[in-house]
Structure formats: C-alpha cells, structure tokens
Length: 364
Ligand code: SF4
Ligand code: SF4
Image (cartoon, rainbow, N blue to C red; front, top):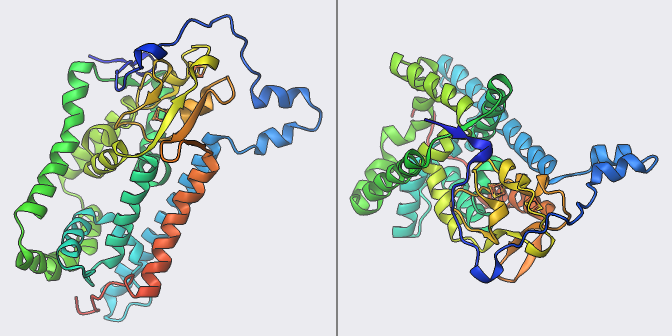
C-alpha cells in the first residue's frame, strides 16, 4: 500500500523543456561547510554554531513552541483560578485565540463586511491575518516554521523513522484524493461563513456564548476527552509516525488555506541547473516528497519552504529561495526575521490600537 518516502516522486511542477537538466555527474561536489571546517584549525566551533537553514528554522520553531506552551500554561492557570472565583489571579492570554480558526474566519468575514474588528477574540483575527500574510510572502512557511502541530508532527515522523527505519508515502492513487480532503474541509467552512451567513448571522455567532467561550470549551474538550476523541487522536498519532505530516498533508484545513495563499506566493525554491550535479539529495530530503532535483522552480501547494532541500544540497548556491518581484534570492535569515517580525508587528499594532484583549468579561 505504501511507497518509501525517500523515493517518492510526485510531480508537482514542470521543467521548462529547454531547460531540462543534462547529466553532469562528473562535476565535482563543492565541499560543505562542515567539511571545510574540519580542515581549518579553530573553525570547528564556528561550524557548530553556524546557522544553517535547518538550524535557523528549528530555532524559530522552538521559539514559537515555547511561546505556545507559555500561552497554554497561562490559560490553564487562568481557567483553574477562574473556577474558584470570578476574579482570576491570572489574566486570560489573548494569544490563545490563535487556536480558534473558525472564530477568526467569521471575524474576518465580519471585518470585510463592516470594516470593523469585532471586539470578541480580536487577537485571533490579527494572528489569522499574520498567518495569511506570511503564507503569501513565504508560501506554507507558517506550517514548517511556526505551527506547534507541524513541529510535533515532524518529531513524530522522525521517531517513526528511527523506530521502523523509514517513513512512508501513500501511493499516488490514494495520495491525491486524500490531499483533497483538507481543501474540502476548508471549502465547507468558507461556503458556510462567506456564502450562507448574512450580517445578522455573523453578529449572532460572534456575540453568542459559543464563540465567547470557545477557548474554554476547546480546553474542556481536551481536558475530559470522550472515547471517540481518544481513538481519533491515537490513530492520528500512529499514522503520523508512519506517514510524514499525515495531519498537515491530508486533513488540516488551516494548512489548506496556507497552501492556497502559498501557491499564489511570488517566492519559490529555485534550482540553478548548470551547477546541479543531480545527486538527488534534495528530493530525498524533501518532507513533501517533491522531485526538487527535476524541477527548475518548485511550484507546489505542498512546499512549506522548510529549506531541507537547500540544507541537503552539496553544491553551494545551487538551490535558493527566489522572489519573482523583484527577481532576487532571499537569504534564510531574512525569512526567519520576516516571520518573527510579522508576528511581533501584529502584537504591537493590536495592543496599540486596542484590538488585542477580548471584550468578554468575567461573567462570560
Ligand atoms: S524541502 Fe524544499 S521543496 Fe521540499 S517542502 Fe521544503 S522547501 Fe519545499
Ligand atoms: S541536492 Fe538537488 S539541487 Fe543540489 S546538486 Fe543534488 S540534485 Fe542538484
């Protein structure tokens, strides 16, 4: 049923016929940074702390994971202290609204309709805007650089590979229809919110008790999970060990949204064909199983700009992130700083304009 992820070859883009790579196997590989570091005395510590694309992404991922855990801890303290008294000793962290994507989508529709940011869960809307902006600028990078579920999913797949020896890809005839599931789920929510709800319905939802206490309900849902929830979570965790990014690739509607915005992004992974030695390391390293070694430009909804292909490429400057407008290469550090900067900007703007704290009061 499965094919090895290391040999996956889903065609998600095309090489321009005139630019088809020629066999250049006799070309010498450029020594990698670590190899040269071994030869130069005193350079080993430099290579150890050298910010490779992988390390850079991991640093940003861990930073966002720590922020998410901090927000989660604050929310748990807020919840339990609120159970005892009306006046909680810990205030509700607005960042928790990042985990309320449906509320954010309704709020976005309300904002588009009225030009007003609804006062319930305004931080959720701003974070949602930041995610869309990042996706447009840097493809699905939110999934591979920021999202804590993406990080956990990566780690589960790593554990699976260590344990079983490899990860798997579903065969093409299953992979394509399965990838459509996340788009169908997204389509359902967009249809319901953008085409079935009028202004009154939007107001009713946003001001209603379900939305106002959505974070509390979500927490209670996972605090005392039912049998079905436990079974579904166990199956998902199990499959994530076998198939890399099972949840993200097939089921996450948020991932579908970032993929659509990413598809329209002017930023792409670009391969310099003359210097490529066609070793295939980039394709083997790609978690989305894209045939990077056969493409001029990676133009796929599944590319999360994780830069693992760049990391694995032995020839310097053969793979790079290129922007179309203006046409130039972007350094990984610029991507990292831009992602962090956009989130910081959103928090600062939200706080300065009074659109960060939700308007719900203790009685809610
Ligand atoms: S390895 Fe390269 S092509 Fe594959 S998802 Fe990451 S950035 Fe995109
Ligand atoms: S890793 Fe990919 S891009 Fe780099 S030399 Fe090998 S085939 Fe070419």
